Image (cartoon, rainbow, N blue to C red; front, side, top):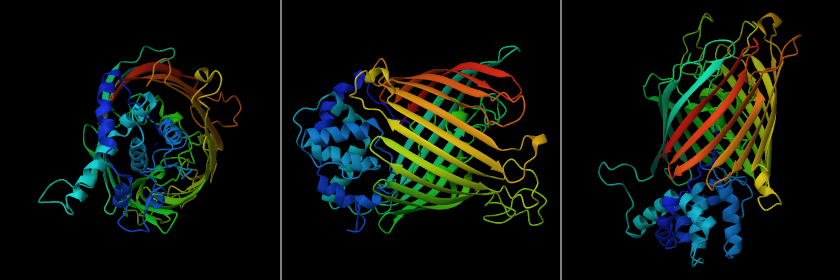
Length: 487
């Protein structure tokens, strides 16, 4: 899900930045704006309400550094107070480079961060200037961007009072294909593969489930498939046969990275409300100035209508038999502070009204605050603080089956450039499962600490340690080393 910064500063790459800056400076901001919209009514303002491409947030270092650069060199300021697309950021950076005779370290880092977007923009403008208007032959689409991530994961988890757990070496590969047909829309296809078994302690149903794993027995699987487009002035519509809840939200209210260590700490503290349900779905988001509002649904069994007699799984889309999640979110996005409230109703196709842990309503309140990097002792304080609370109420409770009201929360702290430029220190604390009001219930917790080391522009190595408790009083502790390749 969702806002982990790619810190791509490495000493070996610094020598390449100067010629790149010179190339980027040749671009023209007017041409960029013209390309990004074929109609006057589809300019950058509409693209900014575009959730998938809106991946530069006011809490990101790149947004803040770009804003400072524009002020320092008297360039056009950032008029949008919310998020912007990476291409919008690259266009602003390109325009400002015309006024820069020599880039400082921060500006070089920005050039490196948006090098891919600058290259794509230049390629498109070159095509326009050459009169190229359509793809030729069977060439790969010039409007499609392919990005990928591969993770090597070596780790082990021990259970208290038993023998040590075995060390495993697994992987996950994630490929994203993003296609735009008119410069303002998005067709996204994501493909995943991984070899972690679901029952492994690190797997999706394991006792120490990690975010950076995938169970597909080395098979490629379509993980995401949806189409997103702007509607009128401030609205974005998303629809698809394979879409996840957070793909349709206007805001993800946490800066704590979703691919850190423990999966349970990646839900902005509201684990039931931000369930990340996946299936067929549709949603609409309104974004204007500091306000964002989203309404969406996900039908997890929309591809299966076999349960016509209510005897098994499957029930179609938005039916009484089908498993449907409906979510509403409203958020305020400021320069340093983002706050979001969320409500989710999930029915799990429970038409017989049995006690069902997946038939519930849930609320959440989450926030992220970006600290002032220029403050006194700023190096000692986190770059960002993320926190969230969640409440879950089953429609039909059963104390004997632990289907009861629950509370969850989490805190995430990040120190960017910790001890070395480009590296990140992270600490996460939160509920290991929903806390209940049962007698003698010990409120199990989860803790993790990681240190992401930037090796090169596209490689990071992240050692981490963690402790996770379970309601049966068994604690698990362990460590891992994660190597991430981005391309």
